[in-house]
Amino acid sequence: MESKICAVCKQRNNPAFTHCWKCKTEIKTVTVPVERLNIKRDSPLNEALGALMNASLVPIALLNILGGLAGGIWLLVLGEWRAVLAGFIVCFMFPWLYTFLGMIPITIFAMPAFRLNEKKDKNLALTLLFLNSFTTHVFGLLWGGIIIFYSIAYSTESKHFILPYFMFGWSVAIGPFQFMLSKELPNSMGSSAALYLYQLSYLIMAVFFFLGVLGFAPVLIFLMTVGLNVCLISAIADTYPFLKKGDTIQH
Image 1 (cartoon, helix red, strand yellow):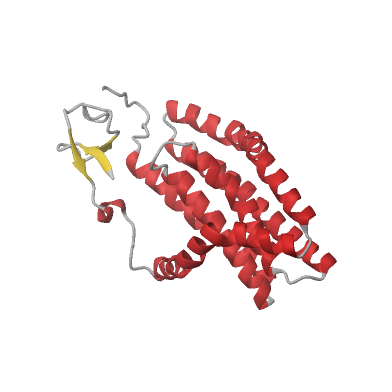
Image 2 (cartoon, one colour; image 1 turned 30 degrees about the vertical axis):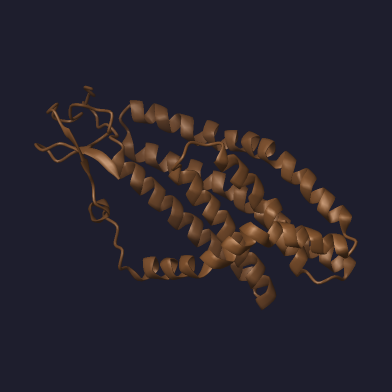
């Protein structure tokens, strides 16, 4: 992660600044090691999340490559063309719906957060940014939950094995987010993290269904979502020069 560190006061600054916003000293660009970001990499929680991520990489890659295609063909062979057609329609419409829904937390939380930052209220601004990010992720997670619900409903009605519904549902639930991410700037950390959260959550719901413990999935997904947003907001707090009362920026 690249940022500018003041040699005098050790303050981390925005990479665009040529002078420290705190002490006005000229600064140079340095690379900040991960260890400097106050991340306890050896904590039990991080180890558990790391193990979960490693275990999910292969299934997610296979589902991204073959899930939707194989599931769609399987459903067509079973005569479930209505489910496939409905999936294509909602998959096409969802990006516009998600963009509209995403404006709600931006209006309620993000815009006031930026105004508070201008007024140099760091803690409240970060709290509102957390709520903005968390609410946006909840919309995406609810979308995956809806696809899981309808996959179960279609399978129950048709009395067919549920696996092809889950496989095709992967493309319906995840495909719109992959499309939207492809339209963003490269290395968009927040959107990439959100996409992985949606993928892992869908996989967890499907696996928990087969294990007969689907009711526990929301608890695990909630904890993952809170953890992800805490990490994202911590990164923002560490790398973005939120102002304190009485400070000015010189750049």
